[in-house]
Amino acid sequence: MAKAFAELAFTPEVRKIQERQGSAKINDRFLADEVTGGNLLGPQETQFITMRDGFYQATVSETGWPYVQFRGGPRGFLKVLDEKTIAYADFRGNRQYISMGNLSSDDRISMILVDYPNSARLKILGRARMIDASDDPDLIERLHDSSYRGRPERAVLVEIEAFDWNCPQHLPVRLTIEEMQPILAPLQDQMAQLKVENEQLKAALASKA
Image 1 (tube, rainbow, N blue to C red):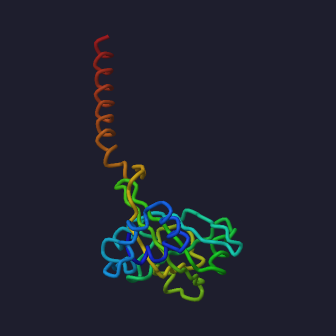
Image 2 (tube, one colour; image 1 turned 30 degrees about the vertical axis):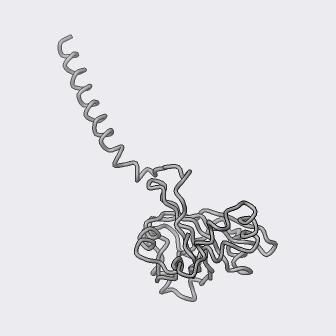
Image 3 (cartoon, one colour; image 1 turned 180 degrees about the vertical axis):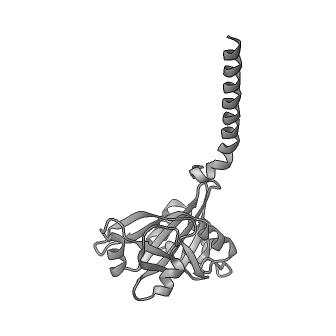
């Protein structure tokens, strides 16, 4: 675990449980003085983020209830603006505005980005701010994919506090239709060829009848 993430995740109550469960010494290594990292995005994180077509996002309401939702879009809709900032265009949805309301009172946000085919997960902790489309049209234009239907209502900018690569254990391998296509293409070609051969055989038999 990266140090920046451990410093935020290992709260006093978490440390107490680690002590009771006998894992405190194992986890001490993540907080050691010589350990660094986990707060500035590098090339690996940047590539991973920009390849995603969705992520899970959690916020907390003013009454203390967590709220998790899935945010999806065309691949690359979540953009890396710099080594500390990621952002995405927020489109009009069901107009419940739960995440938006939560972030208005508590700007802390947690995100999990998953690459199912390669069993990889990136966890992000940050602070989000929302910018209306009318307040920064240039930013909206930068974030908006012109091929995607609809216009953004706002931009969501996340200033990264910490990130960590999650253990791939127990992560199922799942493929989208797009990711399945290289696997399906040879089978589809074979089926098409068999169909042609079948029609040719039927025609040959019919001509001999």
